[in-house]
Length: 358
Image 1: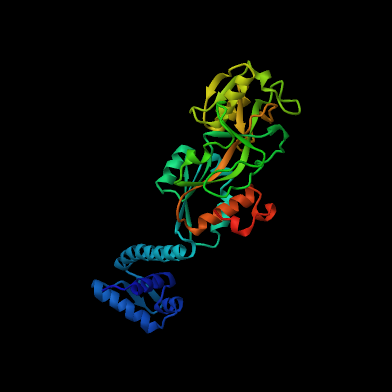
Image 2: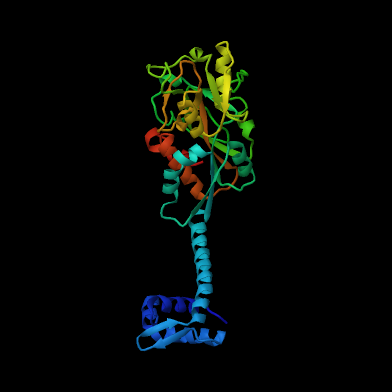
């Protein structure tokens, strides 16, 4: 019967080039090295190592056996690592979902800090919010960052300082709670009450926390007459422009654009439908259209200008979502790091220790 120690001995001989070197490497006595090597050769019925006065080298068969042994040892080490990670952190592989902008600009630092010093591996799924919610309900993801596809937070965007957003405090419970002073209105101007239906929209099988508000900004070509001014831009002055909107019907920026333009007495003329923000920046920069985009989606390197809007076009809420029920401890650490980076952080906002977790 083969023994894992025999595989370790064979690998040590190959690396060190001698039985004495293998003994030092494994902290064994040289007789122990010889014993395990002899036992492995006897079991396989083949010489695996050529011993000589200047050292030891693997035979062709020995090299072939080592290839298989390396696979076995790697799997064993993975098992040991996974067990250690599961005992320490509740999971060996953390499955995280996010829409592309969040995966690029929000997740990398907090995820690194949340898993630093652990054996936890990360599997990242990039997808749109509706797909991520489906995966969360199927419990194929441990957590996800989404933007709210069904509501727009009403905020005075023109008064906000540039940055990643105002960062509402996380709610306490299973629903999403609006940030201070932020009503929630239904996209498309349906007149829903502030905060109405938020818990019902996601259901009792998910737990949701608002991480931050991502204000909408007007994206203009650098050559546009309104690009050179200062202060917020009146959307009423853009009634004759072509607009870029998403290819789907659920994007909250499109909902708020239609509602705002309707209140100003016109319907936006659609020049292009696109979901990739780089594509949107490129077409706006070429001078063919304008767009309403989240502040987080703004990209450098294009001939475009990002300006606040005079009307209250609001912001999309960026939310951290997990399945209801037990969860690995590392998920709580991800939320803490995200909130510390983009939601203000418990230390800076005075959140009590018992309210920092999900």
